[in-house]
Length: 171
Image (cartoon, rainbow, N blue to C red; front, side, top):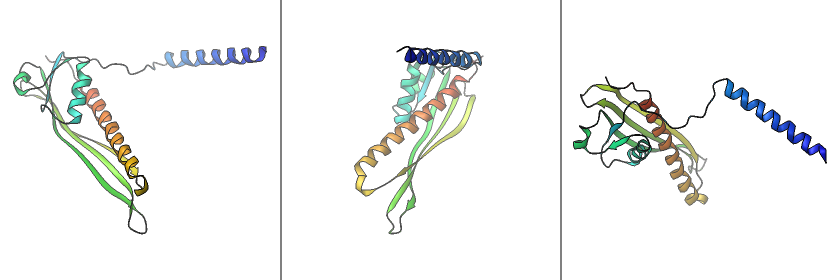
């Protein structure tokens, strides 16, 4: 009966030691982003799914303005210039039936100040995912495709948020 307690204590002790080592090397969870600004205009309004997710993510930390008229009251403007979803066939079987697709999400954005100075010149972020396909499971694959696009969209939003967090405060 004492064996399991010894093993459990040993495992607990090992886990505590590893936690202390990881913390000691500077590792920490990412947490919320902090920004050098309190207001930002996110354009265009209303925008696509990426713009909507960006607005929601930014609203946790800063005031988000969304119209061209209110953009003048903001020190920064984040503009999504284009958002494209693409689906390309990358694999077929011997009878010519599609077996694999490649999904792409391409987002072009820029960040500038209200004075017109470019802080981040137009930049393109591309996310790629491969998805197998079977006509037998068409509905399930359609759902999987939608989920992959949502994941890519979240990745793009996180990359843009990291770019915003790296900006220096306006002078």
